[in-house]
Length: 249
Length: 217
Image 1: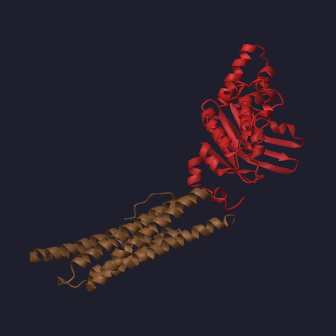
Image 2 (image 1 turned 135 degrees about the vertical axis):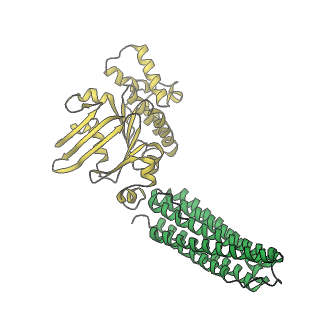
Image 3 (image 1 turned 180 degrees about the horizontal axis):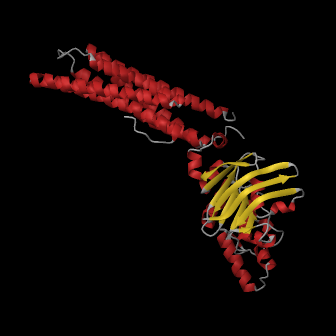
C-alpha cells in the first residue's frame, strides 16, 4: 500500500531540468533507498516530498505529489506537511540547547505545554531513537556534548517527537563512524514498523542492508525501481548494474 | 571503468579456474592412459597429484571469500564469485573420480582385458573437452555455448549406455569376466558423472547471465 504517490513530476532550477518525469509509489511502513551518482537528482527529489524545495528561489515544479491521496501543493499546508513528513540530514544538527529542550522543541511549537506530557514525549522519543539509556541521567545537559552518533540519534528522536508518518533521511550516516552507523541502521529496521522511511545513500551496502525497495536515479530520471534484493542480485537495466558494481559514478 | 584493481582480481580468479581445469583434464587423461597401458607408475602419479587439485580448490575458495569480504561485490560480480565457489567443487569432484579410475587401473594391472578399450577413451576425450569448454563458457558468459557444451553430455550418456549393454552381454556369456567388466562399468560411471559436473558448470553460467536455474542434462 503506498503512502506517497508521485506522478509525472518535473522540477526545474531555472532552466536546469533537474527532475524528469518522475513516477514512483512509496510503500507505507517500508524503507525506500534512493541511490545514484552525485548530481542525479535524488536529494532534490527527497526535498520535494516535504516541499523543502519551496525555499529555493527560481524553482519550478510540475506534476503531482500525493501524500495519503492529498496533493501536497494544493491540499496541505507546508507546516502541517513537515510535521507529518520529518527530515534528518547528513550532518547532525542538534539545536544549541539541552537534550530535553531539543526533543521538546517541536511539540512545544505545536502547542503542547503540559510538563508531564512533554516528559512523556521526550522519554518516548529518546526510547524510539535508542538513545534513552545513554542520556536519561543528563537530559538537562547540552546536546552539543553528545558524540556524532548520539547527536544523529537525537535528531531522529527530535523528528519522531512530533509523530510524523514519514521520515526522510539524506545520507544520515555518512558522517558517522561504523559503530554509530550500525546503531542508526538497526534503528531504521525498528522505526519502519511505525513510520515510512525514504533514505538517500551513497553506500550500496547500506542500501542493501536496510531497504525494502531501491530507486536508481540518473540524470534526473528514475532508471530502475524495485525490490532491493532483486535489484542488487539481478538488475534489469545495464546502467543500474554498472552503477551498483562501481563501474561508473 | 572505475574498478580496475577488482577487475584484475576477477581476471586472476578466471585464470586460476582455467589452471585447475587443465590439471583436472590432465588427471582424467592420465588415469585413462594408465588404464589402457596398465601403467602402475602413472596410476600412482594420478593418485598423488590429487593433492594439487585439492589445494587448488582451497586456494581459489579462499580467494573468493576474500574478494567478497574486501570488494563487497553486488549483482553480476557477486554471482560470478559465488559461482566460482560452485565450479571448484565440481572440478574437485571430477579430480576425485580421476583418482577412482586410477585405483581401478592399479587393481587391473597384470590382467588380460576382456576387450580392447575403445569407447572408454572416447568418453574420456569428450569429458576432457567439456571441462575446458565449460570453463570458457563461464568466463565469457556464453549462454549459447553453455547449451552446446551440455549437448556433449548426451553423447557421453549414449556411449555409457552402449558400453553398459555391451558389457552386460559379455558378463552373461562368461561369468568369469564379471570382476573385470564390473570395474569397467565403474570407470564408465565415473566418466558419466564427470560429464554431469561439466554440465553443472554450464547451468551455473546460465544462472550467471539470466538469474535462471535451468537443468541442461
